[in-house]
Length: 241
Ligand code: ZN
Image (cartoon, rainbow, N blue to C red; front, side, top):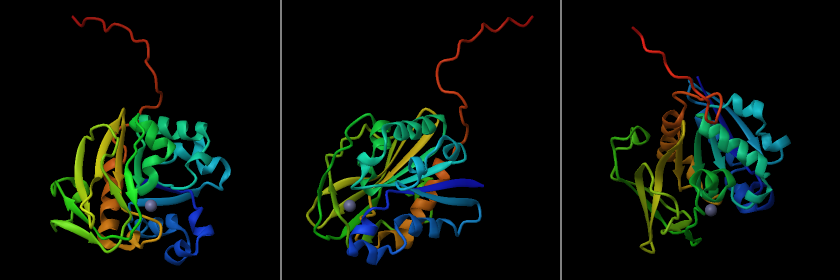
């Protein structure tokens, strides 16, 4: 069983009608909805309004994979909560950052960079070109590209460290390109960043987008967790005679 926590700041859906119309229960519920169809997933949600953002030590200890969506309220996540998430990833918890989570505190901490990019919001189409059909996150994606009728344009340069692997490159009406699906690892934790998912477009209802996020949950799920971070003092191994 993979224990998944879908975290959403859950602000736009309560303040903007255009977002409420697309995600009436919140983006987190839309994501939790399709993930819950998998019998090997146990899915919970948390938002900014929960005590400690719903990200206490106890909750993180019971989480194998966290999915993060945030946009306008990154700074309302306390530093100590972001640090807790960061440390949980180092220990082995998988982290999936969606769309504007590129600027979330945990993601920037994990990257060690600003994770900046260019953007414009003109409702252009996007084509997500598959770079490696053989990667587990791309399982079942047989097309050369996935087309979204409308997405927010994210453009290079995306100031991230070189990823372990680039799985998709997005291209847009305006000819911009973007590394849209990338993997990293930090200590024992695996990380997947996936660019689609602007709040006014129904991207999270797209079956292939759902498939990629579902595959990613399985890919970043922990293989081996470190219970204690740091550098233990070790003893010399005695020679066996
Ligand atoms: Zn956006």
